[in-house]
Image 1 (spheres, rainbow, N blue to C red):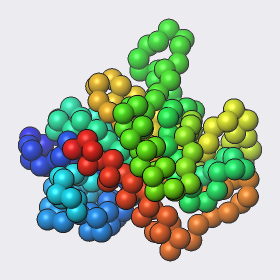
Image 2: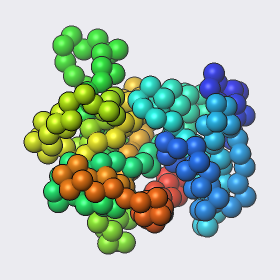
Image 3: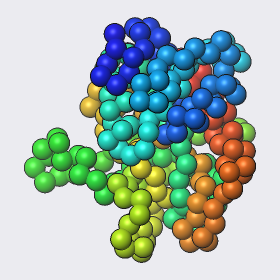
Image 4: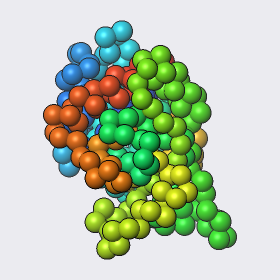
Length: 239
C-alpha cells in the first residue's frame, strides 16, 4: 500500500503520528521514548517508525522535512493513504514576543502564513484561517498545565522564507500578537481540515528575535525532551 513518497505497508502506521521536521530527530524520539520499534519508511531519508510507549500504546513517528510543501505531501499521504487520524507536529520555532522565552512550549491554536498555500481552494479573494483540532489542543493544554511547564497558546506564523531579504519583516507579525515563526503548521492544518482529520502543532522556542538568543545543541535536546514527553502523553489518549 505504498504511496508515492512512503513505502510502509498497510497497517504499519498507528492512528496517531508525531511529526518532527528532522529525520534524525524522528529516530531520536523512537529510540528514546518507544520500545519494540520498527523502521517502516526510509524513502528519501524520511525515517518513520512505529513502536510502543511505556504504557503500551502504539504510536508512530515520522519526519516531515522542512517547509510547507514537504509536510503537505507527507501529511496528505498519511491521512489519505494510511488511515492516520491525528498528526502532532513537534518542532522548534523562533519567538517574536518579549514574554515568550527560550524553551517555552507553544501550543499553536492557529497558523498564519506568508505563503499562497490557500490559493488552491479558490476562495474568491478570501483567506482560510487554519487552526488546530480543539480536542488535541485542549488535552495538550491540560497535560502542560499539570506538568507546570511554561506554555503559551496562540497564533504562529508559518513562513516560506528563512533568509528574508528584509530583516525587519517579522515585526509586522509580532505587532499582531503572533507568538513566533516556523515553516510547516499552516499546510498541516489546512490538509487536516480538507481531509477531516486532526492536527496540532507543538513547538519549543529555540531562538528569540527580540533578545537575539539562541539555544545550544545540548540545550535543544533537553528542551525538546519535555515537549515530546507531553506529545506522547497526548498521543496515548487518542491512540
